[in-house]
Amino acid sequence: SVTEIRSGFTAIKANIQARDPIRTLSILSHPHSLHKVKLLDRCCITHQLFNFYVDKVFKHCKTEDSFVNRKISSIANSFLIVKRKLGQCQEQNKCLCGQESAEKYKQILANYEGLNVTSAAIKSLGELDILLDWVEKSG
Amino acid sequence: SGELYCSLPNPRNVHFESINMKNVLHWSAPEGTGDGVLYKVKYSVYGVGKWIRKPECRNINRTWCDLSNETFDYEEQYYASVKAFLNGMCSDWMETTRFNPLTDTKIDPPMVNVSSTEKSISILLTAPEKWKRSPEEESVSLLQVYPGLQYNISVLKKKTKKRWWFSVSNNTLVVPWLEPGTAYCVSAQIQVTTPLLHSGFSKEYCVATLKDK
Amino acid sequence: EDALVAAPQNISILSTNMKHFLTWSPVTVQGETVKYSVEFQGEYEREYANESWIPICECSLITATVCNITDDISATVAYNLRVRADVGARRSEWGTLKGFFNRITTSLTPPLMKVIADGYHLLVELEDMGPAFQFCVLYWKKGQESRMQQKVVEEVSSVVHLDTMEAGPDYCVKAQTYVEAINRSSSFSQTQCVRAEGGTSMWL
Image (cartoon, rainbow over all chains, first blue to last red):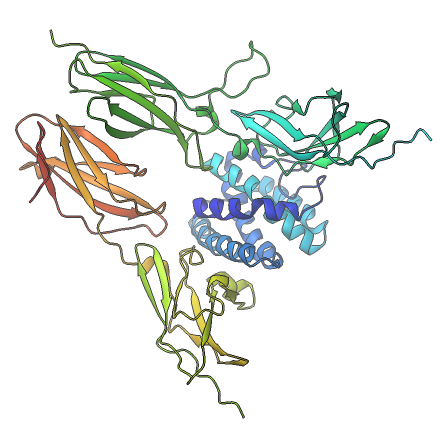
């Protein structure tokens, strides 16, 4: 699924990022980069972020472009699969959430809520490669 | 007044050209401006609130600027921008799309080293190195940047024009049981699965197995 | 008052090797051209996006009664699909696929395979079935089925090298496809055996 998410995103990356004029703000990577997250917290933050995208982001990303909308649907439905698997990890206590991950997620939500909902959603969607690079690097 | 009048046509096609994470900003001169146009360049880290000027690319007349040093951290993403000047006039700042060194770089083919015995050839592959700031700096192989990297290797038996394919994750391959006194040509490509990247094929390196004693 | 246009019937899916097609029976209206439009809805749309439907523009106002939905069925979730008919300004109700479609149910056929012996080298040529497919190739010395060896082939460019062979015994090969996205494999192809020293492919 992550491979399919990556190829879906690559197909619309330029289009989506062009809709985000704000260079000076990031939802995921500033002020604290995902890459600074400790190993122990990675699973929890990954799970929180997949929930974040499913619950908050995709539904506000409808565009006038049919091709883009279909790719967003493809990504969103693939996210459901990964979200479900991570949910199972959490149920089996293999994806514990500590103070650090709560702080990190709070920061991301603050970044998100600092913008109007459509701009925040499009910016978050445009940052999918930041999430995927980090998820794939974390292995 | 001394104020610049920004009606000069804009630089065009402002984009990064990146090979092994040597990240060079390129652009085309504004339409119809001929010689004498000068440029200045700035860049920003995506998500960070300021543009940073590149002094070495201030008032330059070439249409490229090496920003490898400034975009060295491939866990960040970047924008760059160019402005043109001519006869007291200037253009707007023209920006790149968002540049992600990890996914937007091109990878060179691997170096291929082939040796032979009477009935076998041994192939040693070396992945290219990530661009580094100075020769003294420690080299980082792209293998470290892309852990899922593997090699696709083609072995062509020149006489019969038959080509065989191998996919290996480590960087050596021995092909035994070959015909003595025969030329074999080897070419290799790098393949990364996440993110999806692949290099071109290296040129062919030919070697002959030794003759039967 | 204009007669109503009947909704398309017998809506079904043909799915083989991760290629998915929606088909339906033609709606007939005397002397008129009937055009069809297709929409899909994934689990995400049902549960998080107010049960919204997404049009497939390649299958908007088409006269054919088949639509290639492969690119849109791109997650292993349950999809709803629907079709409606247009005749001039008149439009039918939606005809909806009975039950969901999940690509995990696609039928996987064994790969076309050709085994080649080139001197002492055992090689295999496999049909390119698209990026979603890997191949699991098993090979063994005839009579030594218990010592089967396996190679996973991802890049199917042309002739793939499996191993070297000793002169004398037959070497047998069979292959199956594997689709990681749905975590399923096809059945195995027929076994083919060859022998070193330029033996040509022999069916068992």
